[in-house]
Length: 150
Image (cartoon, rainbow, N blue to C red; front, side, top):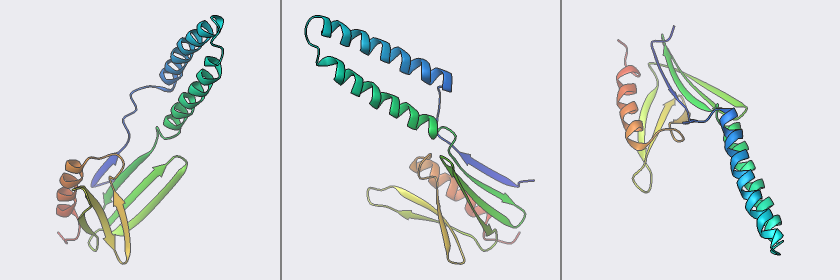
């Protein structure tokens, strides 16, 4: 049983069926306009409309592939586990809770980088799915829960 758990994931408001419906709607409108222009003699519109639809389909495919991505921190007993999923790759790093250190590093531009460290291992957390204020707040919460024997 986890004592503390944080999960971050992308905001995917459309279901897979909804994404297909949006692509189909945009594609049908774009092809309708392209066919209309080709009928009045501007036939070069068709290949460009096809390229536009390929780019749109690829963008939605990329969104679909990364819809299940996440990052999680789980604190259970004396273990702190950081798990990340990026498309089909899942990685997990486990630290001893009492030896782990939480640090914030300021990056150029004022952004904060949340790092978890222990025994020469370091992992960044919250870069993809959290904003700067959320990373700072999470760092405060984690500092209360790790690194100290209670």
